[in-house]
Image (cartoon, rainbow, N blue to C red; front, side):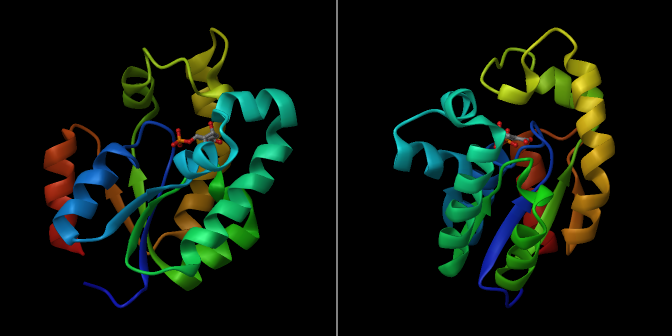
Length: 169
Ligand code: S3P
């Protein structure tokens, strides 16, 4: 295992940060933490409700605080939200306090995995594919910049991906 205090998963919605992350944490004996879930537990509100009441800026401020707190600890596998890399301060902290793995997924597979999910505030509306494409264009360079390792999840089931990724760490 690499010497960074935490393992951090970044990548777009539907890449498997939460589902694969839970399995990987188990395999590696790390404590699993999900930044979005952490925010929901602290506020008692869903990510969607926070976007509704406080706007995206309000959510991003909460995300920054949650990540800083999770990263201050050690021995965690931290699943970040897809937009965590938008903030350069977050990126610096992720790198300083974690080994950062970028989970890659194609837009088509992302849309498929998220087809029945109505909870993502940035995917409300009928033009999901275009939205996912826009987000990918904006964020792919940011994921590439922050990542220590890129792992392509395309075509892999969750357990398969967790197993393959574990061998690389
Ligand atoms: C977001 C991704 C979500 C969540 C919020 C914003 C984004 O997390 O943080 O809806 O900006 O891509 P997941 O990547 O876990 O879905």
